[in-house]
Length: 83
Image 1: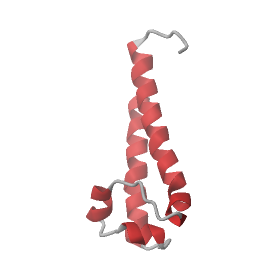
Image 2: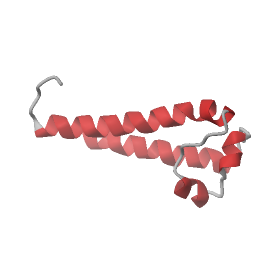
Image 3: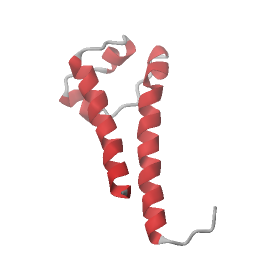
């Protein structure tokens, strides 16, 4: 779109976009949960013993927070690749 033809810039933009997508998904989780929708990776939820219903009911237990932390950590990893 902006005409930049630099593989390093493209690589950085890719990681920034992935991080932004992950964060946007996390930020939208409360909104989607009120509509009985959960768009979080179920493998991470299952790893912590968390169900979709836990998000829909708005539970705040440690295992739910651990799911959010693990997913947010993936966004952080993408940002670290950019640096």
